[in-house]
Image 1 (cartoon, rainbow, N blue to C red):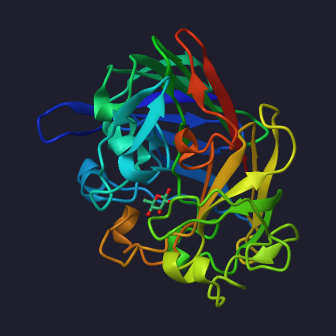
Image 2 (tube, protein in one colour):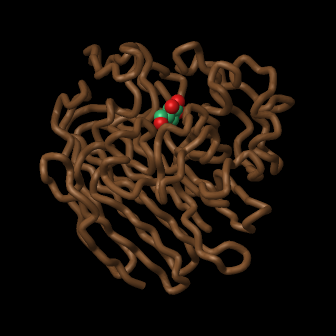
Length: 346
Ligand code: BGC
């Protein structure tokens, strides 16, 4: 087990960005950079023992800065969307940065994902990233002290632990926005990957991709992944929910008790023989299949990132929860800790 710190790159203003590479005793490794506490690589063997990087990322900071895809980044203060870019807490309305079509707040206005995080090596297999979110940043109330710890075990589990403590009542929803491709992006899209989701319901969305409030059964729909199914099997189905999003871009409700670590998803790629298991204690998971990539962004090794070249499983509170009292709640009081864990096991 080891953690190695290197200089990754510099921001245009000269600020250094560091890379922490955690390697376990199986030579599996995770690379995380301090900008956005971004998971920029996750290298693991295929069935023949050939190592390959199973997530999208970039070779230099220019790629991250030019990208609008939140690739591998930690997103917050509120991951996913808040409808109308506003919400009310204890009778007070908060106006947020409307960074999507001037209408909605997406991924907290990009705050956590574009920050330079402080990092310390806390063990021979773990790095802790921390960030202070000032009161009112992107419109969110409260100073919030945030830490995200990446830990890699010899069971090939990459564990991401989230912790945030506000100094007044606020909303918190954090996740990692990694795009996985178990065959590596050098080998094309993920439509042949088999996906199983521990989710019997999902939250359909309106024309602004905001949940309508309906909790819809997946039974008999293209959204049914309760048994392993190719991601591509129904992605082009004649379903208005899929047509408007060009594929899956939806929150699924994870079965079982939220707050308890439980299985979320299993993915396998027949061609490479690689598998991924996801576990989390969060109530929801956004399945997004890189529907809006169009080849204009160059990923690692100069590979153009095309539509469906990756899938995201963003464990989280449901989108727009601050405006949906019927959803599992994401409001935290002064001094109340938000704590959560998600594990990606290869
Ligand atoms: C959203 C997509 C969005 C993407 C941006 C995902 O979490 O669900 O709608 O395009 O983030 O990279």
